[in-house]
Image (tube, rainbow, N blue to C red; front, side, top):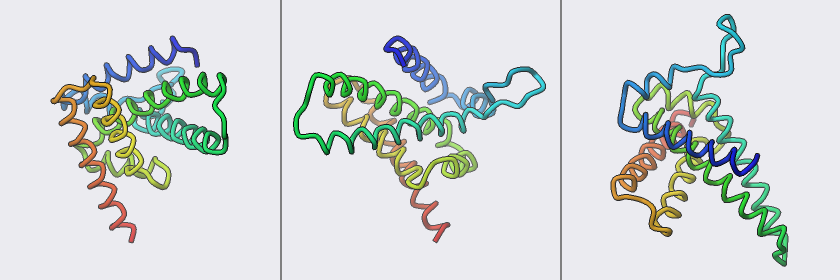
Length: 170
């Protein structure tokens, strides 16, 4: 997508994160919401499922780009342009991960639903992306202490849910 489109997507994801992070009414409303229905007689896709699909798509693209970069010996101008685009995609993925976590962290049922919607590494992958984003934000000095604590709590909840899911599957 275009840079303007990704910027708009990032801003919308940030807005949604801010709306649901500390407000249980907004969290519940967004968690029940469906999108993409053509008319009032058609069911839309649940927001949680849509976000899980978006996260998975960005995770798969990230893995492919990392594998291709590892095979290259030299870095070209095209590689640097691709890296810039990759960073934009990584930020989108991080914001989606944060929003997924905000929506699911206060509800065991939603967390279980999210685990089923994600590929194999599931909640562990979401936790890794949130953690990576936190480290990046700390490195560039753009995270407040409150945001830092919130992300650490989200990572802990995700890791606990991932561990519980592994135990129930064993």
